View (cartoon, rainbow, N blue to C red):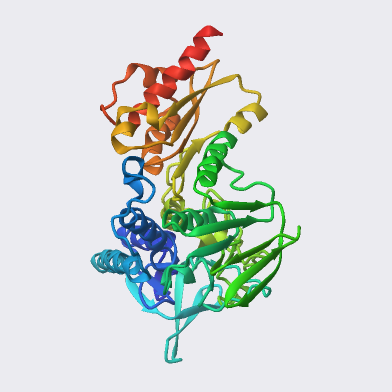
Length: 462
């Protein structure tokens, strides 16, 4: 007999979903959370804070109205760190309350402390005051998430050199900012601060960035960044960072970037080093990530599962939730339906980017005959009403089957609009859906019809 049917380590998206799914199946569940409150990185330093910060900036900076009233327009003239943090605090409190209520009504027990394995079926939990308790379980889910990669050459000080977890506790808004790392997190923060009229330099050692996106979408996005004077420094690594009042960053090609503040956002590592996984017989890679069987989320030890960012790609809150549910179902003998072939990516930059399905580069690689349709948001009446000068939707269709192969959007509301494309794609819909159906008018969703007709016109002429 074990103390619990399932012990979940971590209460982020995958951990919470696994815990509640297990409880719904009538199982006894314990969630171990090292933080002061449940929610994990997603609620406290990652997804929710960064998206709340983005929304606050866009509102206070009057960003969405500048198409009409000019670039100098602001709702609040002087925007300080307190203005940015006030909304974040309320949002996080609400998220934690909802999660605590979910756990309570599903009889999920929670325990605050650091968990470490002492055997394949047992963990030791060390509380804040140093006391320890051991608990056993028939099954475990490791959902401890990740933490920022912090190399030795970066002089982090929580004053003007931050990692991506620390930036949400900003004490002042800088006049200039250097962001190292043009991944999703780095791009999001770079564009959020740019919307505050902060002078931003984005550094990436590779010659390209966000390579999983369609190239045409990236070109549109880069054009928007350059139009806002975001400086891109691609293709050269950082050789030194010196803090002397301001922050001086030197690149391998000799270029020097000076700024008031620096954000290092080049990668994250699995927070697994304190779990004593060796005692359970589980290995990790050089970034602390755990390898699992994709269909079941099982580790090399069958009764121990892992889900969320700790298993690596795609590291999205949306997919992490589903991974947690699938792991719990498999642990207790349910066969979850196979996941859909395509799921959307959302990048909460300014402007937003969202994508589902194949890129044009992937379609070419597979040698599928295809045609693309493009719609500009400024072509829609809703776009005019909103004062949008930028924004683009790109749809890719097979000329042989007429099926939608991919949908790619950059611009206002992209992460919401993408779900129409997602539904059509997973239901194996064709270009006829977009041409024959009526969309609300005026809406940005009307861009689907415009892009569909654009592609159809090209296909008919062939």
